Image 1 (cartoon, helix red, strand yellow):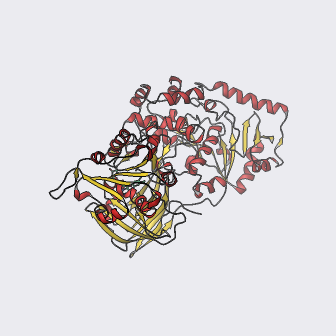
Image 2 (cartoon, helix red, strand yellow; image 1 turned 135 degrees about the vertical axis):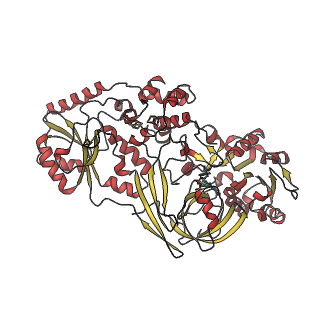
Image 3 (cartoon, rainbow over the protein chains, first blue to last red; image 1 turned 90 degrees about the horizontal axis):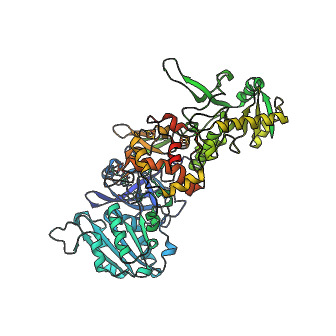
Length: 276
Length: 341
Ligand SMILES: Cc1cc2nc3c(=O)[nH]c(=O)nc-3n(C[C@H](O)[C@H](O)[C@H](O)COP(=O)(O)OP(=O)(O)OC[C@H]3O[C@@H](n4cnc5c(N)ncnc54)[C@H](O)[C@@H]3O)c2cc1C
Ligand code: SF4
Ligand code: SF4
């Protein structure tokens, strides 16, 4: 009989220090995934001895989906323990879970990604997908914000002008608190709205970041005329099972783990209980 | 198929036959002795004499049998650089017969089936269960099954459904397994008087039920009144103790806990029941809590039972057993909320 809570064993193959608090793990799984891992889906990682937590799949590195990347911010009991992982460490993994982005509906549209902090990780696999299928999308812009320059993840992606040009993606970055070397925008990510023009009727916005940031961003996007169903949010409620059973991520009649984590802003806004 | 069985045959012959093949679970009185509190509850039954078929309600529901309040999922052990996993979940070795389950609790199993349907350990236990239900002899003091269409009669979810008609039980089958049981020689054909006696019994129970409300009115009022001041009043009385969740046959929220040795070399992951009334239940990053206010947590339980479940599954998930009102230290009674909506 299958024990749905039993994780598969996996090995940490490589670790990249993004910031002092955030690491990107390259994880190798023994078995080929039964399902393909869609952009926007997540996995449950187990750090044996500390706990299990949901994490977005930031990249899938091979067609068999046995090699994936996740970017983890150390906030609590289990995530902090990821600081002690070394290449070769054994961890547990379950998934993939969740709905993923509605790729069909996004085809042919302009894409405006707005991310904050480690929220960029949740959009990263989607960005990879867009790059690999670039001609299926219109204009693509990424607006990203972090607290300080030291909190920025994926710096070699964010500041690689050559790749951005080749992939035809426009990338703008802002920080709340600059250091002496910072010569780009200062302020919350909504500051960057002043610099871009978004074609309201043909753009899909992808929003991912802390709850408060998502609220402000949605308000800003609505002001620019974007309809609620063209704003897609990635939510990160606390959850334990990832499969719609445990009840923690239930908000109103939505369950973030199975109905989400990707929601149209309209669904979120019209929910009786507030989702963000 | 309808039949009748004499009580004497039920307790002697049927019980003995069932015991040969099944592990028997039924209503029985627990506590007493060192504890001052004695209460009917579902437990293993070895002797027919321990059955308390005339019980009105039990403290805990049957959910614990299928959804244990403390279930070890697996164990991990570090051996050098390797980690070994051992599955700790346990399947039943023997089929069980559940005797004397009331209609509200039979309906509750259908709610559990929807939640846990993807878990093979759960479905295996359900498939290994023979349900012999029992309609209530009299209404319980805080139940409202007739308002939520889960009693006093049951239409499905059982193999056999008994009704006490005096010197015997009226038996209605609800499955092929139930029908096969009814072909045993001590079940006799039901006479027209028996059918009448059953109907009379159920009518009596229905008449005794107090605080009936219209489910349609309540569910549409809920959709409108999410921000009503009524909820402040209820939340103000609530201690957020979670007792209602624990005794509820359809509350299924849980947490998976880590039980690790100090050096992390070995440990288990364990499912324990949780409560949406607890403050950290919907806690998220950045000091953000989906339901920080006590009121929104109180509403979440009520709405989950009567509104969200309706939108999601087309059916309310409260079965009207009244246990939450029986065990609330603040005497909060759902019926009062419903009648004031
Ligand atoms: C679908 C989904 C995708 C996610 N993707 C990523 C990702 O790509 N990278 C990443 O770093 N994090 C991600 N998270 C958040 C991550 O799961 C939490 O940070 C993690 O569960 C915290 O576990 P812990 O044991 O370290 O914290 P705990 O010790 O349990 O709690 C410590 C702190 O973290 C908060 N917390 C607990 N659970 C969550 C949660 N689910 N979300 C946010 N905060 C929480 C607590 O409120 C507390 O303040 C994602 C969450 C979800 C639901
Ligand atoms: S909410 Fe109360 S009355 Fe309804 S099923 Fe749960 S315990 Fe019974
Ligand atoms: S039992 Fe009563 S006091 Fe306790 S959490 Fe439930 S409603 Fe609140």
